Image (tube, rainbow, N blue to C red; front, side):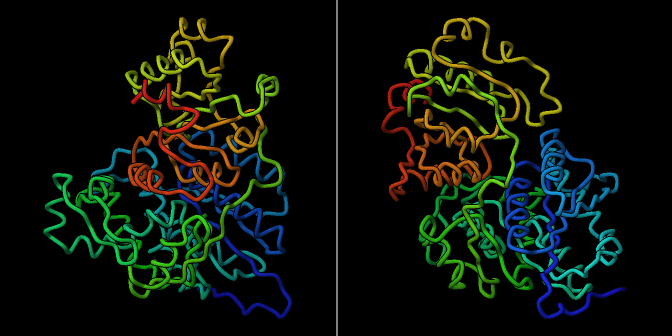
Length: 417
């Protein structure tokens, strides 16, 4: 197998970036790619084909059209074969398919010129990519797309799995786990799938974090002032012995030209008067949740901008706005707010002077964007890591104005909780 050559003195490093599925993974990788390229690195971006969502495909097209100096390497996946593990999430199914196709990458990477210096991979493929990189004689880095706080129980999971008493407690959602340097954490705040040995999510985490002592470094889209305690706990080897160094690289900023959201309505609103409501690229509220949210918004009288969706994958999102929230609600609130469907440039909206607060599912990209821009959050966690984020936000006070139901949103927050 071909191997890379040593980096010539003064030559820029050549890095290959390899994200998995979903906008929550893609966006940090695109921003990191743009940042590295702006600092003189040669960057190759591995694009998995086909994508799960239309938003991923659209963003990749926009990114490469505005960053022609970044090389695109399309990677066609093998047909998905269902494993013995529980996995019905379309994005996790893509994770599994990517992992099962990684062995096809070496010939593609070996042909790159100049030779690769390192691969920056997503956590769900860390184990396979670290072995591949070793065979190619290049370094491996991992980019973590969640918080340092949630990454801590992830790297602790193999040890947690050995604690039968804790696992028994976890089955009923009771008890606590002790994370060195971080104190106790309620088991109920950890996604149940993460504690299920038969679930792909748990198996994937355990398999991939077990390989992190082999990599050269672990990038996280966070910063010391924001998560000092968790970063220190991870770097002290208390949570996981022999873990590679944690390298905070956040907050990752927007790349040079991200697709703009044309919202002249927002320009007409008073400063800090608008509640922005968005639950991420893959969270669709239930009909009951939508009904409660519409009731709360209407009773509060708040001016609002609400981004809605009806399905986890946008390609399956066939309903119109009026079908999701109801024509009568749109009619009654047409002078107070607007409801839109589809992808928006969230960071651009959060940066707008009219935005006074953000109702969020607490996906990590949303939290880090709001924190960087100083926008208060009302947390309405929906799934995954969000339960832990809610507990963290409740006890955290750093001056960014993050919270869970206090301040400007108190009146209508009561309506929906």
